[in-house]
Length: 258
Image 1 (cartoon, one colour):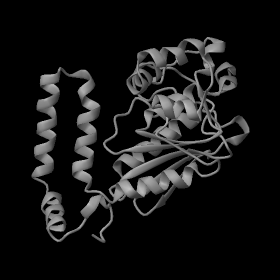
Image 2: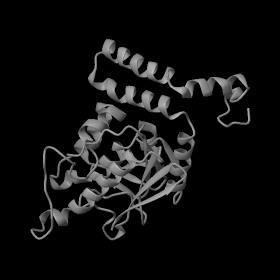
Image 3: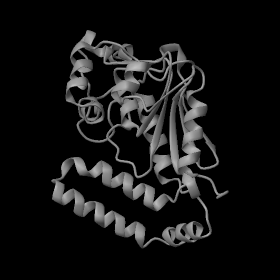
Image 4: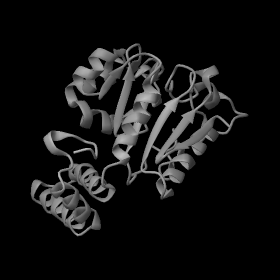
């Protein structure tokens, strides 16, 4: 198995472990990767997922040798799982990408499928498949413009050029830049922080932010209100207000020490 799962506390880490091909994904591994995300989605004991590539690279995209090999399993379908696996899914819980080495082509699409990206200093992101006429077919032409704007996205999509961590941070493609060799630990640290928040409210706010792209401003505001009411009616709010009145979280602290 080249797709592995490790769970600690309420963090669900999904590991692509095929370093011989820079964690490129063939069809069977795309299926396993999609199944891993389905397992995360249904796991009541896991609040946040981390997606990580073992061996120094996040993911070099689709395994092109597998696609051209008639003896290997491959398929492209309009419905069901995407070619890279999970990128058509709409999850109810956040995912953090821990990016080292290459996150290119379909690997870039997996990174932007995630909510946040923790990127190592030496990492490289890009639409490297531009060289071979291989399309972005796992949400790259959708999510990349939404993340960094159309002009910057087209610069990446049309030229296929490499984008390094400092530029990725400046354009909003990377959320944090960390030292080499630390992206998984830093992503899991952030995931643990997110898991400590009231989950109903956080997930509803996240869902409203994601759903608004297909709505008018009026409908988006109404949708936000509906999600907000669910959070207000949640027992979490009573617990949170009780902590506030006892002095927790004063002066912007995010722990329970006050």
